Image (cartoon, rainbow, N blue to C red; front, side, top):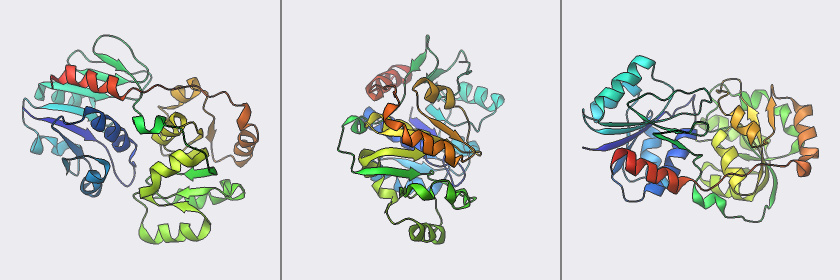
Length: 288
């Protein structure tokens, strides 16, 4: 029996689930797990993140073309409907689902990783790579990371939202080349995609629409501000509210200015190193 880990990625969904998978798989160390992604490009780049085995499968329904009945699966996606999920639970000998929904309900024949739920067969944890829990001097006052995807070029459409703040820009993985070059002319300072870790560790304030970047920044001692994109799920809002992370909607530039002016008074919550806890849960659940 083989073990697979599927994450939903792509030009309209970004890499948040991929970055979470990297943290978890690296914590699992030498376990023989193949990462499946829903686009080929990031699968080809996964080795740069320490992932030894990765395959792009295009769409979630192609999982059975790679995995066989009786194999094991970690599933991080909202693509599957209830019928498809039940088919997966019956197809795989062990099935672990990752969910960010506060109102999630665990099925009998699955294991669940959740930042909200607790109970038998559930690992209540937030996945952030251990490397981000090392504090470094914050040499960049403000950085802006819209996300790894921006198919509709919303960053450009709402440029006035952050223009007066003069932030460093973090470029995303799925930005088209001409779009990326245009953005570089608008921002005096920017981080390349490969410099994500440096951006996280160096930024005092991070404005971002990436939920994973919010958590990475918080772990590193930064002060993240979450920008709720209209095309993104609101599943993380209860978690961020509980962690006292400011949330900005509708690209409200007045709101963002007020938050930054009072950022030192913001009493952020704390998150713990959980990747080893998650790794142990997966080893027990999947009998690795």
